[in-house]
Length: 174
Image 1 (tube, rainbow, N blue to C red):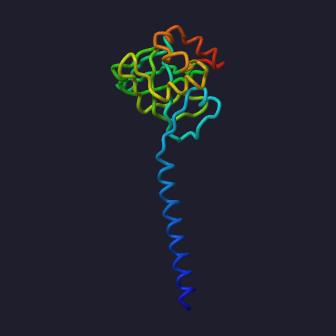
Image 2: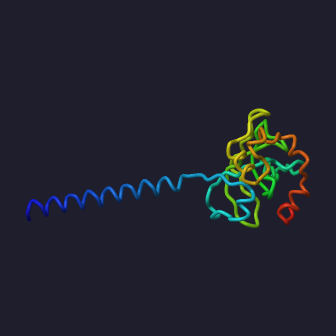
Image 3: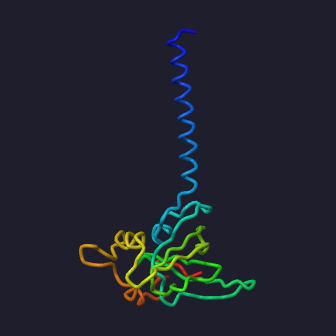
């Protein structure tokens, strides 16, 4: 084998190994990425059933229902982005700052025809805070334009009732 052909084979081998390593790294990253979605996005294009996503929006006033199953508190509430509402089911204790009419981000999975199965619920930490993803969802939905001031306060969402959220999506709350 000539020196030139050995160099070619070595270069090809290195290129194949580098490509394989890059593919493995990208595959590992893609399985651990958690996407943010607003309720209208979830209903328009439902994610793969086992895909973990973050659902963000405002908790619909009057939608919180609490029960206990097997000595575990179960909370069911609706989250809206002003265009659509998604029912969320969370087993566990909600954060102390969780309130109806406030912004929330829930981590979990969604299957069409079922409530969003949340494994974690994050509530805002003061009255002026709004998660960046929720603010962006409000901008996309047309409910807030940054040129006209700050995002809408949580109090302005208190007027949205559970029935109005049902009408927005054309379905009954689960």
